[in-house]
Length: 553
Image (cartoon, rainbow, N blue to C red):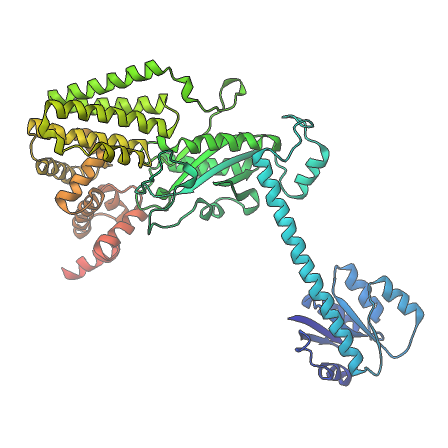
């Protein structure tokens, strides 16, 4: 709905203009009225109406002067001038101020209707064209950003790392894309429980675990970055962020460093986000280099450690660009020799009943694959061949072990479907654990869980993690976590929080400590996080619990 201002020094004319035509039918609503030139000019400034119907002869400020002043202050709306006589000089002034709609008094209903209708059509056309123009500008801008990342925006024959053609510079300035520093970030929302069924796992194509929270990095950006300092777009299969300017790059780095220093909690939205940070570049010509370096990191996500959420590109000495190794760089005979060596070491450890040696071998295998094998599919094949060799040799020597191993097809399918290398190593370690148990009749797993519970009950105030306990007790963390859940019916982190909250209740009941002191005493450095966990487990805040305990005494 457009708006109209009616200005005339005679009240009956103002009221007559309101009623002479159906303004609402024509798409207008009356925003206000004015009885003199000063009121009209003030109302135009405040209301910014789409249309002003105004008498030429106005008290205080003449109608032509109202139009001149309104135009000078930036008013772009339409005027319909009402005049009781013709005056060529007034008409000239009106034309110079973009007024083309004249109606003589007394006002004719049909003439006013037709004039207003024509103006509404012009407004609608202008709005539509403006919207289309804005959409075209936005589309053109997104194309430019995409081309900057892909390296197709500049003519390579006319540019270098230091020379930027003036026409390109002007265009980037007009699009708010010219800055002294840039950095490309590739991000993905995922869930570590998701298992891809494609051998060559692609960072860019992984999906959320069914039912997991679709929480993206872009949801967090406005909390610490100005919206004008970054661009978000999808290039191919990659979700990208282009950071613009030194401040944006610095603030994003501060954000990453904060979470690198403080481990991400399992229930944090960031636990479902992976970020590959490209090199920072000082020229729009080199944005492509930042994007390429981020893509190399993104492709290597398969090789990230458990719980690793951020990887960043590092410029090599001599300003060399990060490069991706090829499989041909690895000498085939050396690879086969290493594969056989690892196989024999694991077999020796298992047959000897040396679990520590077996765990060490698995860790060595993990490090070797990460360092020497660049492609996901090659890493899967390398690990598959080792496990199949171990299976064949053990089941020939100890036929009763056949029931422990999956079939050859099952092993191949499982390994090829893993999303991370560490999951494959965990699978191999758990299988060897079962073999060790079968061959050497290890103590029942329940005893191990009893030891872990006892240790947790004594050391709840320490920064305990399942990974630390697995290392302390000589187990794979993934296997130990599943064993704990299977034995106790609850996950380890849940048990640890229950233990801490139970002890916190004891401290709160004593009444000697403040809430933040209790939080520290039971192992929580963040009092807000402690409050959140306490409420989740106890159904009330720590302060409410302490007050309840006081009232019950």
